[in-house]
Image (cartoon, rainbow, N blue to C red; front, side, top):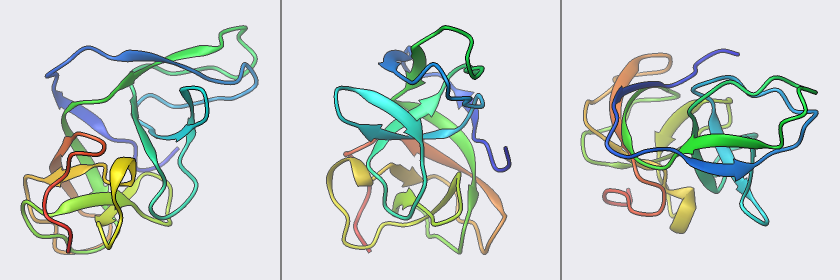
Length: 136
C-alpha cells in the first residue's frame, strides 16, 4: 500500500480494535472507525478516523483484532498544501491527508507540525482523532 504513515514519536500505547479476519491491513495505514470499535482502511475524504495501524494484519490469519495508535507524532503524505497547526482529515486518496473543511469529531485526524506545500509531500503531524487544530 502506498503513502503509509510512519510513527516518529510514540506518545501513547496502541489500543486493540476489532477487524475482519479476511482483511489485510498494512502497518501505518490510516484506519476508519466503524461500529462496535471496528477498524477498516480509510476509503474516502473526511472518514471518521479510528487511528493508525500499529502492526500489519495479514488477511485470513485468524486474527480479528489489530493494535491502533490513537495518539503520537507521525510522518504522513499530503494530498495538497496544508498550513502549520491546521486540522487534518483523510483525503480522497487512501492514506493521504488534507486540511479539515467543516468536519468535526473523529473526522478531524490531528494537526500539522510542518507545512507541506503540495501533493505527495511528506510532513510531520500530531495524531489525535477528534481533538484537532483550527478548522479552515
